[in-house]
Image 1: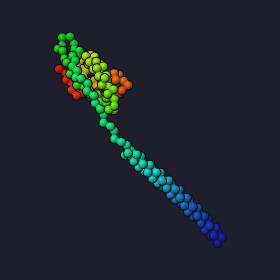
Image 2 (image 1 turned 180 degrees about the vertical axis):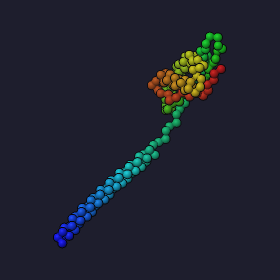
Image 3 (image 1 turned 120 degrees about the horizontal axis):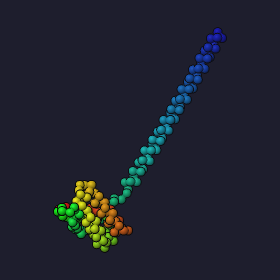
Image 4 (image 1 turned 60 degrees about the vertical axis):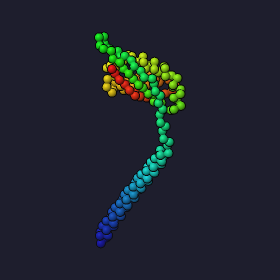
Length: 163
């Protein structure tokens, strides 16, 4: 009988320790899930507040434009080739309207820089969209050096013809 009671006591101790182990595991999992829930709730609440701030931003101001006088130049060609001409109509894009009046007195300088640059081009320099993109970037760089400290956002082509 004593052996029987000892065997039952050992089984009961194992069962009690197994129940305590499961209880600890359940408590740990519940705590982990609670922490994840709080973190996810905080993330979504903070993300919602950021969107409200962006909605209150004022709309951007439309750019202003300044027309540059039309230009016609002859392109550099190989000896014996027929002469080709380039006719360009250009508009300058400016971010702020108040800078327009500061740029207008510099238009003769801008035209001079454009003319001297365009006269050095070959017909192959402006072939395709890549050639026109390079031309636009180079003209933007030159106009910004002429009107400094004002800034021109872009040079826009209204018309470009090679004859």
